[in-house]
Length: 83
Image (cartoon, rainbow, N blue to C red; front, side, top):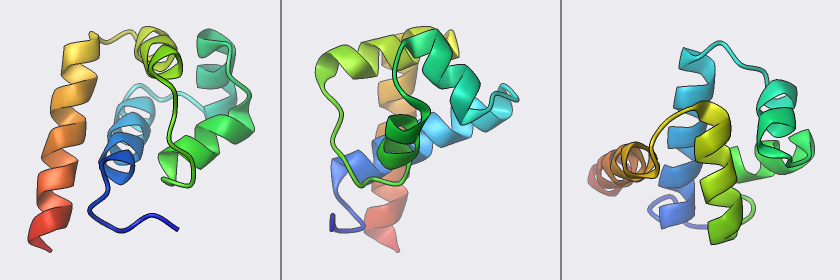
């Protein structure tokens, strides 16, 4: 189980935040990113660490720049480290 301050937790929270902000289901994002919705769930919860290729496909599926996703992930990671 990953620690609360692991980078994959911040990334998962960023993906979930952008997905819900865009009113997308995990199924819709999975379809857009060509990743099974179960994997989207595992990534969002920090249970798995996605490959670089999957992160790029998720960003594309969310219709955001990779830099925007990375910045938001770092923000969540910083907040988790402060808690």
